[in-house]
Length: 490
Image (cartoon, rainbow, N blue to C red):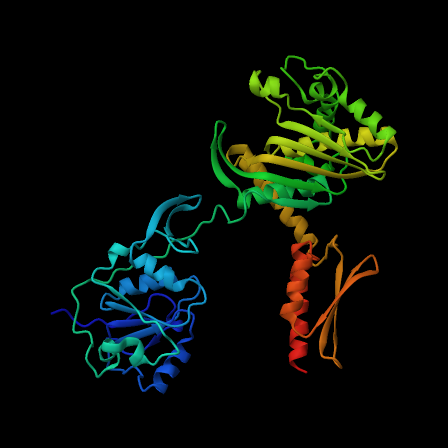
């Protein structure tokens, strides 16, 4: 006969309550605090005995399932897991899906995973699988806290809460210690179809585009090699200029190179190339489309038909010539004020081509605005498929761009960027015991939110979409919490 095994926790020792270290049963209370479950058991004269079968009690409401599985494998004397308590998430479903083998092996950008067949589609590492638990019972006890323990466990009540009967007498199974995976996250979760950034300048926008691709991009295998990519990426530059700052030169973007690219973009000559952007815009379709845009906007500054197609369906799709343009369209919109431009790209290389194209588009915008005597407005670049090369020089350029971005953000730490949807001013009326939130823009009050229930106010702010930036949302959350605390003290 083997020696009795003492319960030994590899993970979260401080979060577990050990009753009998030589017991054979563990209780998972899901979202219910262990102390409350123990108090409930005590009220019903069912307090687990230090000599009884219950070895340990713990919660499962967050991301501790991998640790729980490893604790169980390291303690093979535990042959029964009682699942009871309030389940405010899907912890119970996760438990039963795993132990019933209801999962699929999948490949993800960060390696192989187990995808649970549950409502939440939870994903676990592959280090522990259900077949490693032989003769293991998951006992689901429903009814807490409305029923009593006897009503919940019925004929099995004495088996778990009876006299001293189930101390481990020894087990032939070895302890199994499986380390937790070292997560080297290469792709962070996001909605890959809807990334959008707004920046003041082209260099700042470029840095944000590269950052989002580096952090959230999905690995893809293209003909040109491995890339990280996102779909329908929208970048808005509020104050585009036609010349790059000197500090971009160490990132491989020189003023001379930009000027040469802009000159080619405004030329209809193709040289030995099957096409150029300039040729597509200035002559490919039998006329100078840019001149026509200027003429139309001069006649009507509110004209909304100033759209230039660079993509030729006949040549580029139906009867494909060698080479296809990445830039597919340009759209000019003035509405009688500043001239905005929107450029749509079929594909885009973010590490170098994006910034060159941005300065090229800015030059086109400048030429049209100058001809019309209009100030330059915003520039929007939409990339249907944008990718990042993380190999060789591409990887080094990305590292330099991200390092420059980090330095800029450090310099600007503590500065609060304007939310273009307005400001929110918070106050508390102590006489009426209500919080007051004024929505203002340029000194004008646009609306007011008032009430004693902060959660209701929060919902109204969300429904009206008055918050337009993450940093403003963080500030608003802080102010809401302060207002809530102030009302509670009254």
